Image 1: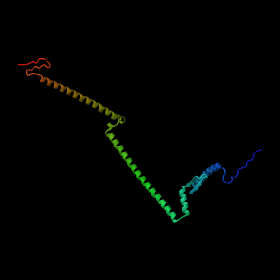
Image 2: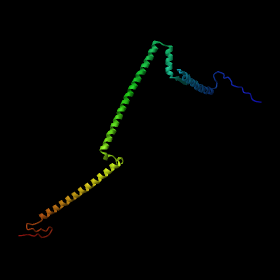
Image 3: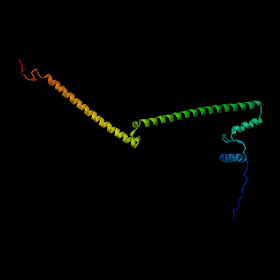
Image 4: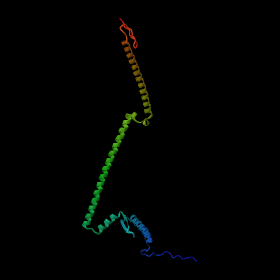
Length: 207
């Protein structure tokens, strides 16, 4: 015999006695409620605010465009007194002043950033110009092939010039040494043209 189904049972709308079931149901129903509210805002373009306190006294809220704005509008509609209106105007004025101050600070920061950017570009241009003028001061790895060829030729010329100058200095030193030797030889000659012996035990006298 086939088992008969009881069909869809009607849920009794009463507070649940089991705490675990209560918390699970609250979480699911809350999500569903917020989802439906979001769909209502999207489909109809309405403004809505929902505030829910959980069984554990935690607060959850949903609002479009936001809960605070909807509550302010609701309170103003319920109590359009001059005091409430003045307070709202003061709040709005404070918000506007704060926004203007923040916009001013942002503009100043953007201006400073642009100035720093321009200074950086100028420094880069000056550095590039200096590298173009004094390219040989740049690292060897940064030089082009033509520049390396010119640098090689210059270093070879410098090497030859140093060798030539060194040879001239050596010749000048040799000439000075020979001149000094000639001067010492002239001082060791006697009036008769005889060279006196140095280091001998007996001196020679001429009459």
